[in-house]
Image (cartoon, rainbow, N blue to C red; front, side, top):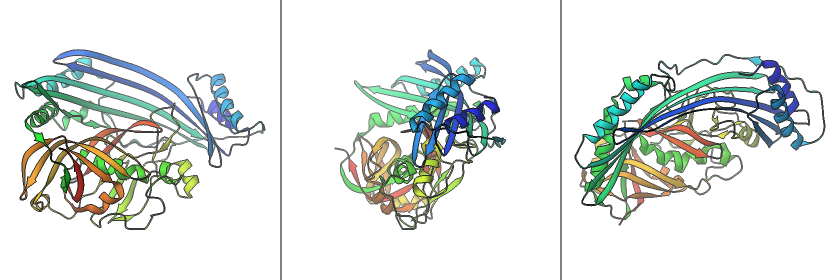
Length: 459
């Protein structure tokens, strides 16, 4: 992507005013998407962008500069702009890079950004037409097929030089059901760190059917009652609660500056003994997986909580300096315009000891959250509020009528203790996680779990 000799010169320039570490991150990314609305192509987007970010460390202080000028002169000017902020001293620094090949654990067969347009449109039509055909009450269907081809280069003053490529595909279908002047929505949005071959493992039509089925359920649902109750949260995207309410509190971005409720709790029991939580960026073909993080470190399987005991945090280079702990391969960023921070990859609660049928039958009265939606969290306090996208009441150990308008309200530290049953049907769902280093793809997941007591918002 950039000549090695120029990289060495740029890194040396970045350190010339006293910096103790310098890093260059380059990317070339192609994004494209096709959107279908009510069976017709509504929008086609295809764009490519590239640029470089240069970061300089001095202890725990960092300076970051970016450029789209990839000439030698442009890169040196970027490096000088970062170095000049640290001071005026000019020293002769020598950097020698050692190129290292990166093993590809996520090979792609059909690149979604270059595949035949007719093939991509056919996949999208399969999903959208199936969604429309579910029921006459489906008033509108919108579908999007997205592809990303993200090539990166990372070089630093310790001699690291690595290049990698991340390719992702995602299908999003949203349906609206309408009856007697009332509208309700449903959606489904699977994604993988794969090409179009991801559709060899599931039928696009099933994505559309899922979206429309959910819209129809919500159309027929009454409002959820409010109050404290026992809640069963289903697998897959149900793991968004752990991701948001607890996962962000375990990132060095928060822990390293003392802004997390999980500070200083390594080795302590912070969750029910049935809870084991993992962040794993190595899962082949997973939406949040990468071969290396955005600082050039291999991703890894990182056990965060084991049998309720806090075992580790997710740590980037700056967090490592602040905390005196090793990096964990969790440094991520949306692109070159963002300075990297510690972020999750594929984060999930692992399978537990309980049978799923026993979890439901154990609840005399409560809520079954079949699918979670979005929400918000404060990492310092762990306070969260999440919408339930599809829910049902549980009465006498049986799943009964659907309800809508439910939300789950609590704190991360408390919900970890109140998870008292963990099932055995682990699955993961896909999302885009936003933080100070932009939006990055992440998997969330869990098996069916039971929270013995939580505040449910409703009517």
